[in-house]
Image (cartoon, rainbow over all chains, first blue to last red; front, top):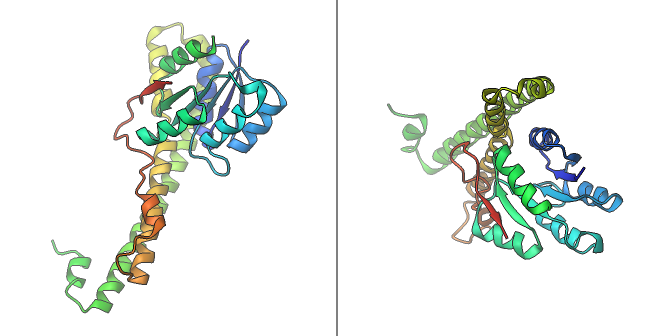
Length: 120
Length: 133
């Protein structure tokens, strides 16, 4: 079973993401901000990280940079799921090493399709 | 209909500033109330969804139920987006309030510049775009 680290400061967003991913058979680990996600990612390897961008403390792009600096997360898919949709922010995400940029709100079937594509 | 602000705009500058400050305070209070209402409604819906969600695996054998649940998952993300929008509006309002207080010149406040970056541009709750790099 693949494990996914879902990062969002919104409890309702984490609930929707976890509901969608668990329903598709993924093991979901949740974190409420970038720092918590970084600590959890270091403690156990996950197969994919799905993170929000705007969070208190460490934001999504900083989390991507921090994880990419860890040898074990050099090739792990990291998707940013955010309300931000500007090309400028997407370019920053790409430069940081994100695998993809998804704009909220997500459609469950499309999210699962993208995850299935990048996790394999 | 003449608004309070329109009537007050004819008053001397000091009185007009006071009127604008009063309007700002009213908007700020409305935004805070809106944020609380959204939070309360979102939490209630999320709690209800959690209960329903446990039954979904049994119900989702029906395609209609599956589609309805998927649509609910997308729609229930409104709380996060609405909260971010109201927080952004509150920040912009605070900047305007500070600017009014300072009655500053044309120097651009760096905070004003950052608040121009709109965090939510979506006007509806249809699913957002996907870019794979």
